[in-house]
Each structure stands twice: as structure tokens, then as C-alpha cells.
Image (cartoon, rainbow, N blue to C red):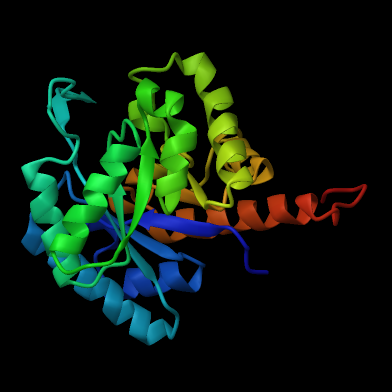
Amino acid sequence: MISKAQIVATIGPSCADVSVLSEMIAHQMDVARLNLFWGSFDEHAKYIEAVREAEKKSGRKIVLMLDLPGPRLQTGGTHTYDPNTLSVLTDEDKECIKFGVDRDVDYFAESFVGDEKDILHCREVIKGCGGSQRIVAKIERSKAIENLAEIIKVADAIMVARGDMGSEVPLERIPFVQDLIVRTSKAAAKPVIVATEMLFSMVESPRPTRADVTDVAHAILQGADAVMLSEETAKGKYPIEVVTMMEKIVVEAERHMNGKETINPL
């Protein structure tokens, strides 16, 4: 079976080879995400070429999404954003947008969005570069949660970016904020992605923890239109296996949503 919900996989050194990408596509990777906070334009240009070559071999369209860095600050093993920046769309972001427009990507994910004006500004920059790409609003700030309805109106899709959200929202509240964002997005008929550490145990292991499996299934049962892999595919040891496992979990969750579960779940 093939899932209805899409799988977003982050491209990096672990899956840069066309043969690996082809296997990931065969196991239902739908969207290739490039995190432009890491690596150079030359590296990402090669990733895009590899995705497109694997796409041709598979005969299936793969959506390309570039994740903009935003005013992100890296401090050791953690990161946050610069609250003093005049705009969440930095000069580096504008260079990234030009890079993506020139390579005809499909989406830009805008980081650290605070309100609808951030989305409108990003759209102006895209248009100024000659593009018409769609925008995914990453919800990761308290301000964005407060302005959620307005952001959803002007964005093309929403991402529950749980990683950076953990810097402003207490960890015990994140599951409930996730539920709010998914429900509000669905009510507005806007696609919503749930992201960050969904199968993080598979960065180092060929099998996920039961908690990770439950996390992915829960996102689908909530109504997520897509679930995202980050380090699991970009830097992890098992990029093909993790996509395969995510597809299995999503298919099973959708089967239960559709009332096809049996008394014996085995």
C-alpha cells in the first residue's frame, strides 16, 4: 500500500548518491528538503541534481523544498534566533531564494515566522527574483502560535517545527501545540507538516523505538498531511530503512483512520 500522507526527507551526505535517493523514492519519499543553514550552495546544487536524476529514473515527480536559515544563532549544540533582527528574512535568506528560484524548486520553508507580514515579505522577494514558489510557514515561535490564524491565511502550507519550538514552548506543552496547529490548518484546508525527531532513534539504529513509532502514528491520526525526516536521512546511517519504516507506520495509521483495523492488529 502507498500512503496518502507524504514523506518529507532531508537530503544530506548520507543520501547524496543517486542510487540511495532512488531507493528512498521507491519506498515513497515524496518531498526532498534541503536545509540551507548547513552546507554551501555548491553542495546543495549537487543534491538538487542528484534528486532530479533519481526522479527521472523513478518516473515520479519529487517536490523540492528549500528550508531558509532565517536569523538563526548556533551556540554549541543548541540554537535559537536573533530576536533583535529587523526582519526574519535575512540577506542570506534572499540569496537562498535567488538560488532556489534559479533552480526551479517548488517550495521555500520560511524560518522563525512571527506573523503574516513575514510571509508576505517572503512572497515579494520570491516574485522579485522571478519566481512563484509556494511558501511553507514554520511555526516555531510563541508569537507565531499567537498569530496562527493570520499566518495560515497567507501561507501555502504550515510546518509544526518542533525543534526550535522547544526553545520557547515548554516541552510538556509541545504535543498540545502540535494538535492546535494541525487542527487549525486542517480547518483552513491548508496542508500541514509535522517535523523534527520523528524517527530520531534510527539515526544510529536500523530499528526505531516504540515511542518514535507512536509519535509518527499520532501525527497521522491527528490529521497531518506530511511527516518529515531530518537528521535521520541527512546524516543517519540508515536513510533507506528509515523512509521504509516511516511509510509502513503511515500506512498502518491511515488504515486505522479509515476504519479498516481488525480485532487482531497482527
